Length: 310
Length: 287
Image 1 (cartoon, chains in turn yellow, orange):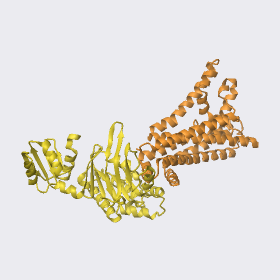
Image 2 (cartoon, each protein chain N blue to C red):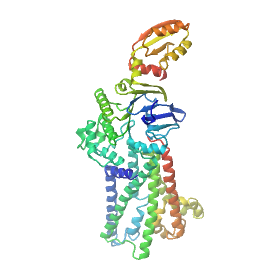
Image 3 (tube, each protein chain N blue to C red):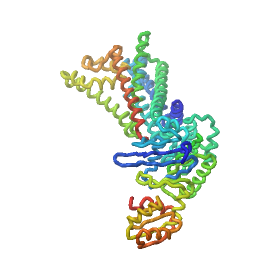
């Protein structure tokens, strides 16, 4: 049982509709204090929509959420003073320098200490532009992302929400961004929600994962559970897949899926021979059986149904 | 709220486009006085009034509030662009994420635009008056009751100005793009003014018998569109010399019915643009 004070974000059947399309369909996630919550899904799966709703940029169609203990809209507005977010692209005043962009955040948050500007720019590796006249519009994408994070960190937030922070970065930039975020999480113990469509990238920093597809949360697991699942997968074909699926779902909940070829995939199984024994005991004949080592991306693609759902 | 306002003023101060447009507006004031001075010299009026006895500086000050005047058009463009940049860059999202309600964001934007645009306009007016005096033009007011009338007209025009800024904020924040505000806030009013100023006299001149009923059908639109010009006295000065034909579009700006109508209309419109606008904005998803 998780203590209510340890829950930073909890959504309850959160739904967002655009016309007849569900961008979010009864989404339920829980983000606990100190976690780095990796929010994974393909482009258009609903990641940004959820972040937009949590940050107040968009209004939900139905459902509710708790943000840092706040349940009502008025409380949530007030509580947002303790969160920071970078949604979609970094929202910068393109005609201003990095220093002036950070000043806008100081003004917004009512912070007087201008020395913080220098400290935050240093923290995100933008010390070169501290006294520069270069405008944000002339920054590279990586610099803009860093500046966005520097702005977000100014108010010492309890929750940092970053939407695809590595989008458009080169491999070196991705690595640096990852190290920056892990460093911030450890140093300041800030809870983070980070969205990405690349599981491999998030797996290196997230402690919990929420998988979303077509506006629905399809799985929510810890990093330990994820790595247990991706380590080994059993692919099996039987003469009665419906009965086998029901049986395996009881024994290995959340671990069984059916692929396009009619095979059953059971992930995170320590001893695969247990599965065969179980099926035979239930009068189900095993027609085909093999084990497969899976990567993170394979797990993700299997989870969301591969290209079939595109 | 004060922080949001401070942020808006800070960003406007840092915006080159705003500074450039403000300078152009002020340069226009200098040009207007210089042009009138040279014109009055060349036609031998002697430089006591603007454009050969037609207009005084006081009416020029009040007419600068009109949507049909160039300074006002420039100011509206400044406001529309400033408001658009917040949506275009996504920086308006920062304000919501930082713990301000959309209601507060809406009002802060409106108040900031009011302060920024009025500061530029007031500087333009002061500059015009100062230069006007320096070049020997007549202010057009001598008695204390005339001063009272001037400030009354200025107050009414200020109310119209507030309505215009509220309308600009409403359209800009509702559409969150540049095309709709430029079209609805800048082009349409100019277009309507052009139609009214062309069609109304034509209707009056060509179809004298039915003029009153035809023009009267659009009287409220004509009245509202031309209130700033009417209040400044320019419409009266232009049309009254043409006789009874333009009686329909001439108003006694000192009458209590005119003042009440102006105040009521503008307060109602402000209520719609600010009340309804902030309500709709708070229910709207930001881009």
